[in-house]
Image (cartoon, rainbow, N blue to C red):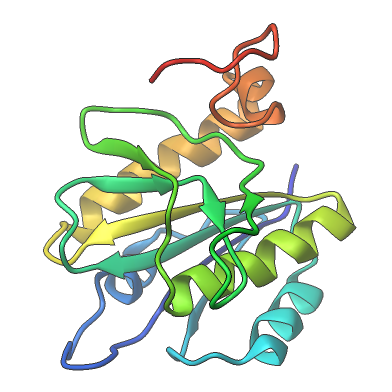
Length: 177
């Protein structure tokens, strides 16, 4: 059974609540799944310590996006201030009517966490995905989506697609979404 780390963030800027923290608090306990709520700050060591402690095989990051209308399955992170250099996620999450795929996670702490976690996962053979969540998205609905993702990764349903690079067909060609 893979070890999983699901992380989100606490309040930031003018937001008194963060839907990712609320979601993590509503997740049912699951064997092999650890959760973490980070402060919203650019602190490489904070993320690296959490990853080193959890030693996950799968990492799913969650971040609040106040202008999003759907769950944004982020595909690419970049080092802060350099959008020309990118690192892609390695875990393909299921597409639903509630999801859309995006290739720019912005230049704030979510993108920074993706860059750090993606690098750690690459060095340690783990798979990684990140979801930007609309501010008013129902936490229980997101918890159900995450539960579905984890069940599929554990039962092998969809495991073949989650082992290849997101956005690629079985032949390795770019797939339209």
